[in-house]
Image (cartoon, rainbow, N blue to C red):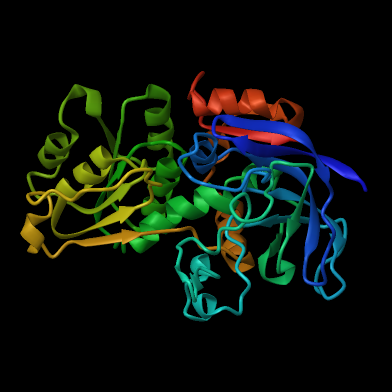
Amino acid sequence: MPKMKAAIFVEPDRIVLDDKPIPDVGPLDALMRITTTTICGTDVHILKGEYPVAKGLTIGHEPVGIIEKLGSAVTGYREGQRVIAGAITPSGHSYACLCGCSSQDGAGTKHGFKAAGGWRFGNTIDGAQAEYVLVPDAMVNLSPVPDALTDEQVLMCPDIMSTGFAGAERGGIRIGDTVVVFALGPIGLCAIAGAKLMGATTIIGVDTVPARIEVAKRLGADMVVDFKKGDPVKQIMDLTDGRGVDVAIEALGTQGTFESALRALRPGGTLSSLGVYSTDLQIPLSAFSAGLGDNTIVTSLCPGGKERMRRLMNVVASGRVDLTSLVTHHYKLDDIEKAYDLFSHQRDGVLKVAITP
């Protein structure tokens, strides 16, 4: 049986490169040969054992590549075509999909409900940090890459760009809004770009890393609060003349940033949460205004499917957003263990790592 190289979860604190069989292609599937992929913060949660996946699973959910083989029932595509697939791969026919929430496809079962059902790559099926990945429901999930766009230009579309934009969209940002984004990692930076596209006219970032602050300003942040120079909530209130922000986007996944985002809201404002939390959250009484503040708390798992990918690539092609500066490091798949070590320890100013087989 033909083999391929793949980054495999062995146990907490161990993801290793090893050989696995190249997947067989079912009637509705497509086999994608990976040309570029990357490492996500969620993959680090998996590495650390903070998010459970099966031992032996191939990790990764951000595939850019070429169709190697099509299933017998797949139409509208051709082998050799450049494509991407979103991190979320809905079937298109589940109750969740037909309710307009494709990210939760397959989440409900007769035994109970588990969120994030639409996230399959590197979660419930083998993922993209490999030489090949099997894309389920190919006609729902494969989106052709325009010839004019490079791999790195579209690399953020499958997850990071989609997630950051979803935070802005779910926050209901309106023209003239004031928005704050807590934590300027890759998702937070994409949330800033999304907030600008949505019409926010004052965008505040919260971070302390100079390189991230510089990128945030290029992507649309009007000002950045350095949390090491004082209470970020007080600084935000000073900047808004005590009013607070219309929308706060939390992009880190910690109790501290969640609580600060809630405290930074104006009455009636919206907290849009993008973080992946590894411990229970608590909502302090004062931050919640005893339940009387008319605030909204929403969460987002990035939408999936080919139409979402097409729209994001349209944004890239238009020149309105350029996310190539987020790719700060390049590694071959053979060196992915070194890439994980760099990314998980956030060394050398890393934002995103491009992985090429």
